[in-house]
Length: 383
Image 1 (tube, one colour):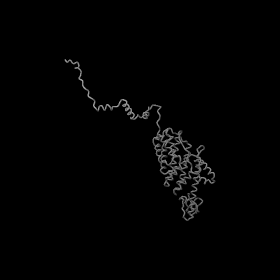
Image 2 (tube, rainbow, N blue to C red):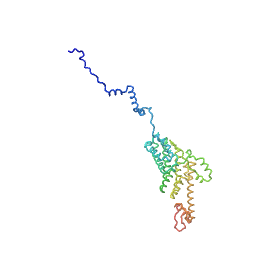
Image 3 (cartoon, one colour):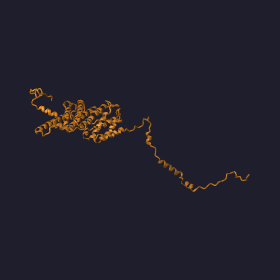
Image 4 (cartoon, rainbow, N blue to C red):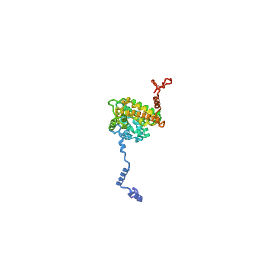
C-alpha cells in the first residue's frame, strides 16, 4: 500500500495551447450588441407581409365589408364621351359592342345597375346624326354594328318593363337608332335600282308607322334666325328651300321618356328622307324616279300630321317642292333639247317621255283612247 494520499486522483494533464487560427476566429466573433444589430438589419431586408392582401381576406358574412369597384360601370363612364365623336367611333365602337353583346347585356338582359350607363352610351353614339353622313365608310359600318347590337339587347329584362323605360328603350334602339344608321347606310350603299327601291320601301313603311302628332307631344324647336327668315319669305317654296339643316336632336337618358322617343322617331324618318333627297337623287338617272316617288309619299299633305309642327313639317313640305322643281328642270331640259335639234341632253325617264308623248297626241278621243279617229285601231290609254 502506497503511502501517497493522492494516488487515487486522476493524473493531471496539461491543456494544449490554442492555435493561431482559433485565436483569430475568437477575435473576429462579434460582440453581443453587434450581433443584435446584424440580426435587426437582416430582418429589415426581408420583404414585409402584404397588408393589402391581408385586408382583402375579409369574412363573407361580414356586413361591414366594402363592395369592390364595378369595372363595367367604370369602362362605360370612360367610353361614353368618346362615342359622341365620329372620328373615335372606329376604336370606341368595338368596346361598346363588346359590352352590349357580352356580360353587361347577356341573354338575360343588362343588370339594373348597368342599364342606365349602357343606354346612355348608345344614345351618345347617335347624339348627332349628321356626323353619320360626314364620316368615312368604315365609321358608317361601325355605326351600323352598334345599332344591331343595341337591337339585340333585351332592355325589358330584369325589371326594365314598361314602367321602367324598357319598351321605350327598345323603340329608340329598334327604330330611331336603326333608321339613322342602318336605313341611311342602306340608301347610301345602294348600287342599283333594286337595292335603292328596297331601302325606299323601308322609308315609306317607317313613315306610315308613325302616329299622328297630338297635343302634349314634344315639338322640335327651331332657332330664332330660322323662324325669322321664314317669316321674311313671301314665297312658300322659296322659304322651304332656304331652310338650314336641322340641329342635333334633343338628348335622351335613362329612363327614356315615351314622348321624347316618339320625337326622335319622327326626326329619324325625316333625316332618312333628306338623305335620299340630298345623296341619292342625283347619283344616277335611274335613281331619280324612285326617290321622287318616295319623297312624294313622305311629304304628302295627308301624312303631314305625322311630323311635329314647325321645323319638321316645313321640311316635309319642302320635299314636295324639291320634286316639283326637279321635274320642271327635266321638262325644261327636254324643251331645250328639242329646240337644239337633239344637241342638248334629255334627262327625262322612260315614263316621263311616254307621258309627254301621249299628252301631246292630237287624236285622243273623249273616252281616253289614243288614235280614236274611228278607224278601229285605237289603243286604250291607261296613263
